[in-house]
Image 1 (cartoon, helix red, strand yellow):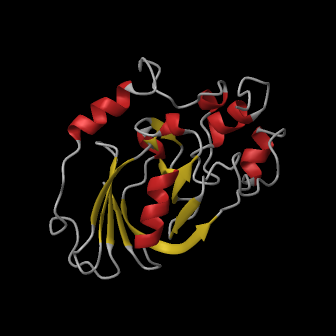
Image 2: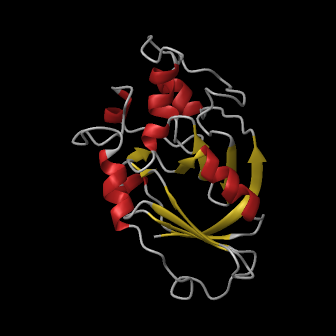
Length: 202
């Protein structure tokens, strides 16, 4: 296993970039530690996950969507869960997620999937690069990529639903805007979602 403790190796980079939504700004306090955004009171990587799983509940789509044209994704940032319904109502899925680290980084409302990318690449925005000059200009697809194996790009600039190679993030407030899933879950959702799939964050 790769050593994650080396200065500016995977932990230093992934700790602050893993779920940035490919470019959202980091608050100054979040830049100071490699685990920026993680809830410090959590005892271990499973504590919060257990709490969230116990609060998961299946939901029906009518309270949130007028129809299921192209399918629908509901992200509940409180329970840290993503719900998916297929257009023909034969598929319903419920996945644990990571969510933004603070309310000011949390965008709520309606958007949609505008692009699907398998093996996404990642580049910091100019402002991120200015604050973090040691960060690479470009990260290819692979184990160091903050977007994991698949990404659903939303109509909101810089916001994505994507995977992560750092599984500690899931079930936690660990993102700077994006919604993260385990790689195996984003792969499944990627297969169900379409360009045009409705997305609602609450």
